[in-house]
Length: 106
Image (cartoon, one colour):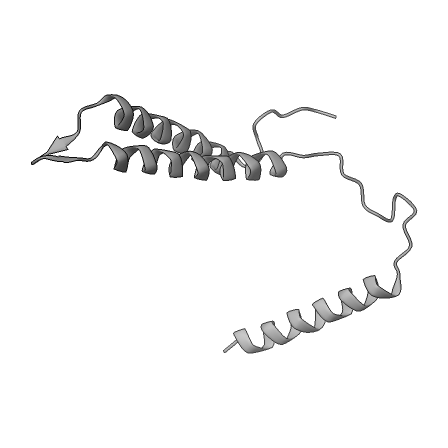
């Protein structure tokens, strides 16, 4: 099996890296820079916004990682037999999907 590296979910990877860079930059600016305008300190704004950007980047990293997981086999290959609950859930999902498709077409 070839390992293609970073070929899956490139957009999410770029998003996570950009959010990391912006978050760390905003956090460090908020901590170390003197950001007073007309007597008001805006350092806290940069610290909190940097922390939020880093939180967004963590979500991006989780999405990127989960999008790059390979080697998962289907349940049929593992000898799994569908139960009544599985069949019921599948039938219900198909009905909802058919209903949504019929309402969405003009």
